[in-house]
Length: 419
Image (cartoon, rainbow, N blue to C red; front, side, top):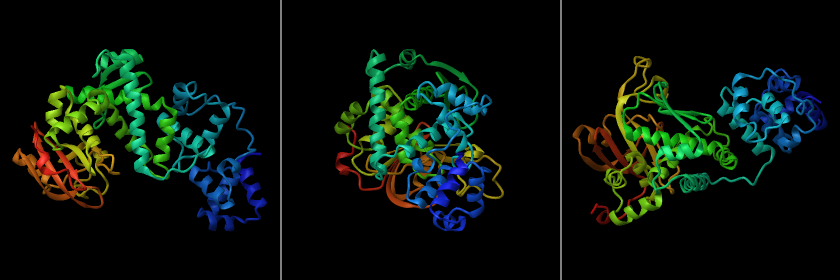
């Protein structure tokens, strides 16, 4: 029985017309008809809606479907073949899974990169082997951070001769190759299999080193099936998938490599919570202000967001669609604007500012930049599409602005001055 035939069989078994199923599942009659006739590959969301209409699981819905176990396809899509080349052995992807992946759409289309194929694979694994639903997104993210912390610690313990490792030691231990190449604007680095590529346009050694460890963390996470599955749990039913939280976790991992959170916490407990701790900690650890920004957020006892902002050109494809700088007149132009380049949130917060979020011209962050000093005051967090009032500390430092957005009151100000 083919997939479409199975869907039709289940519908007839439940004595539903296409119209009945359409009303319950919120899927159109033509789409349901095309699914049953094999004209379209159903999406995961569509299968879930149909299964819910019958009050069964997706696994039950597609059970007894033939043609999934014997693959005769030798002309796979290029990116699918790339996905198999890298992950087939690691995750023991059998022929039935290959055929199932090719028959299911994800977010309305077939995946077009090996990362999206991996995402679809684990998504299917999760819904076909459902676990108890976890709805506390903040708890999930904090748990994933602890998992990343464990991955980083294990790698450091195994391959590094010092507490704060060198990238050469780590890459040698993991058998990763490093190289520089010209990458598209807005892309600092990437990895393909065991090769990490850094954008040759990056001039800052600090940023380059952070990016290298970011990509190492990317590699470690992709090899951890449980962590990838949990990422899917975290982003369940979200249109943009797990890209943003994955990038946040990679940033967190890079910070752990460069500035272990336990060591940073001792520094915070001694000197107090203040945006000035970012350059102070970077100097203390002889490391990255990026890592210090992320680790400052991790030790903060209140709900807060820590960011690094720069004024510069924003790639056209990175400008948010609801950004105030995107108008009919300038839509095709790059703009020199203050924007977020790195962001991290405290464990008690559940939001952060995405890279390339534009800072309004009249914001305290821009004022700190123009006045080249530290400012503090009540302002809005520049979340795209809505606002939230907070206390903001903004510190100008070497052509950047470090900022702390306190969504809840920070610790006693009398304890926030560096020694």
